Image 1 (cartoon, one colour):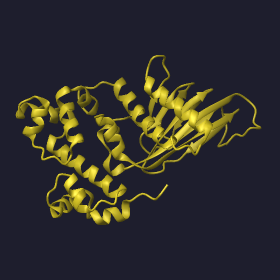
Image 2 (cartoon, rainbow, N blue to C red):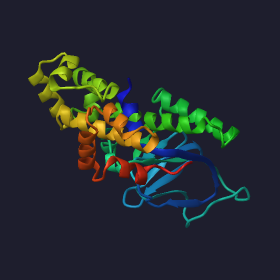
Image 3 (cartoon, rainbow, N blue to C red):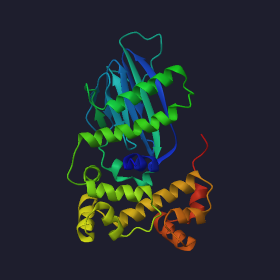
Image 4 (cartoon, rainbow, N blue to C red):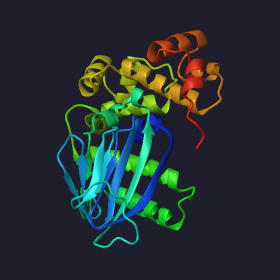
Length: 291
């Protein structure tokens, strides 16, 4: 199981969207901070600058990807001037962009995204990030062919995963989620948790998956991720439970069982402790609107 894709999918809400945009001449378009969302820009032709509201400009060239994992106001522009949406009649060099946005559950930010900088710049380099480039090509083709294509939403989900994965692969670290993915023992335990969040895991049984003694495993897991294995297990169970409540009509009793609770009462108590509301009320108020 790809636990990174599992983690990213658990955070995503609703249906992502994207568009292919052509700009000519001098132009400047601002994107305000909009709450629980992440966005991206890919330069397919020409060049431009990404201008964070509170950061240094980033020059983007053909093939470059800029991913903003948090709601951060920014602009993309080429040349001087104010806000301007160029059309076919404009003159000057042409810039073609692939842009999109995702709604994310900012109340359950997974470490995989929390560790990312405010702006992830993935420069185009020959031989690097091949899966990411392939996803961009496919998405661009679908948008050119039919902007209502049913393949666009799944491709956007894949693109989100590949952007996160590309950054993590390019920034090895000794602690955190990047280190967890590279540590065979911690990775094995995380795979077990993600594969069966409802299983009756203990530190001892997770240590067995990691092929370590209980004490060594607990220390290594905590040193790597900053939290203990059972703390992460509970956090992940509640994250999965919230997703089931939002996106399915499963009975609360069934959600409780899938989350590792034999008692619906115990599950409801744990869920309210985590989210501040009972599961039923959460379902009523947090279910996303239909696309």
